[in-house]
Length: 263
Ligand SMILES: C[S@@+](CC[C@H](N)C(=O)[O-])C[C@H]1O[C@@H](n2cnc3c(N)ncnc32)[C@H](O)[C@@H]1O
Image (cartoon, rainbow, N blue to C red; front, side, top):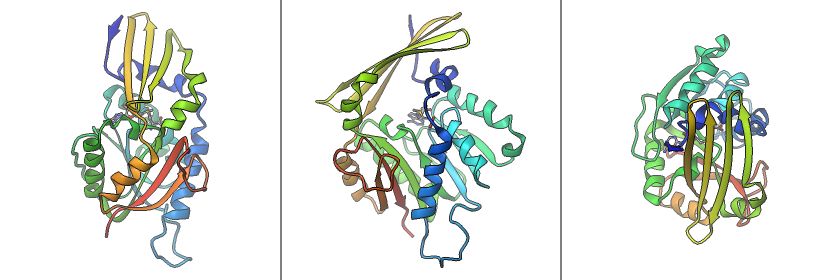
């Protein structure tokens, strides 16, 4: 078995691993959040805040959510990820859709170190646990500082996170198998509650051999993220429990954050 970096071998089976996720509903929810919380003092008859936006997506993976968001909007998007193999799958998916490809650009981008992109984005997205790949406070500070530079004044950042409650409450789902074409994957996770690290091991086997990826993610608590945001001049507009419009609380398993950049 050969050890490889996260998302290098997984990229080709990622869509199968995520087959249970309703990305269309997730896109609906994100658009609803922007509609509900994205207004910035405009009059009620102003156009929807989602109209005509320039959007930067961080950690876009294979573009599953991106496709749904583009299908439901007129957005122009810069689609980024730190894994070239994941982004390669996203390019194939999104460039195959003639109606969408005029509205997208792609870029390899590691959001854990200081980064810069060309553009002045109305909204930035980091969804489905990308935030949890940030392992220490310095990496989170890098993310928030770089987001601030990439966004227009009073632009939005929408991101989500898993909390320790997600890792603790869902331990029954920590092992599974699946396949895509000639490839098979086995996934096994464990959560170290003392250090707050959720580790997932993937074994991906196929005609080229067996590859192992070890993914380490930090299960940030809600309080930790509140503290990290409080050290910035980003304004928290909403922090929501799961996929609801209810406020997040100390036992939320997943939190969606809607944050406004300074003016
Ligand atoms: C669970 S996947 C989510 C992908 C996509 N957002 C989705 O909803 O399917 C997490 C993604 O974050 C990316 N990622 C993790 N750490 C990263 C980093 N430091 N910089 C950029 N991308 C990163 C991974 O390559 C992977 O594509």
